[in-house]
Length: 384
Image 1 (tube, rainbow, N blue to C red):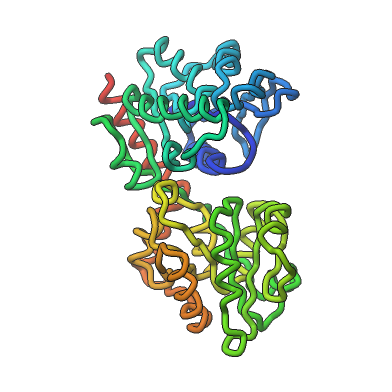
Image 2: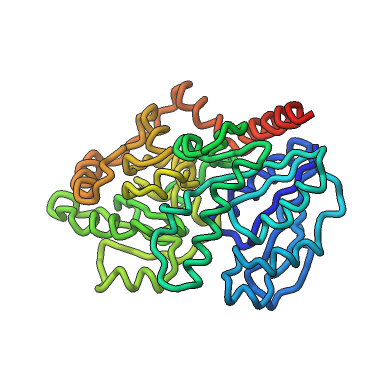
């Protein structure tokens, strides 16, 4: 099968890891997959890059993006019509509800009647990430996103989402399916070796907050500061992933039980997850958090590290069947109180029962890609 992904940026953050890993898995399964991407840097050039064996065809934004914001810049979207795929694909898959990638995807939908056009929705933007606007630029960005977030699902041949929450919010009877976020099966790093590599102490109990999204980072900081050092004298919080400027803003004074290890590559995040005793995924009860599926969920589980998270969203639903995931409150005060109780239990070993193994294996990127291929095939058959 020949498949084209349409996306509005190419930097490795956010939804990038979703489409990029799915693309790799689809290629491993023997299918032809290309990514048609934008670039938020208007000073860059139109170019072709190969990343992990995936062809990226990148068109940078115009200077008009400084006025409209790159994802919803109409002029950049029109410019991308000049660089449409020369190949013919059976599936054209659009990721996220933004004008820049939507314009070429929509034009091709009008032109190529025999192909199927799929939309991937993995975050709630309106009333999720985008709530209030401060100026006319933000108002424009929110207004356009609101229109596209409702419209694209209705005109697509099928919709993929990452959560039950998003599946239920699709206001149409369109063909739809949940495709979660997953992991690549690799060997588990040795905990002691990783502690030595990262300069961590052998006998310390480390809880780790790892990832770019730092909306609830203050939950982890406040939680570690509430630990009774008389009862837990060797508990330390590792923070890794968020930019240094944000950490300096949140940590008003130096703390002996908090260490910041910088921004990380995917492999470094895996190493630190392995070196830790408990992974933290605090999520407040917001529409945005209910909609998404943090990739870090499997980053911890697949290296043998238990997780303490909030009772919010798709990963909270999945955690109900796992003994080594502690699901706490979605209220900050209660979550912090329960955190102390979880830490007092000490480190636990992940149980390797057949049920848990089968559950985790079903979220390998290759298994998710097979599920996506079946979805494509059904959409193709229904259209023909």
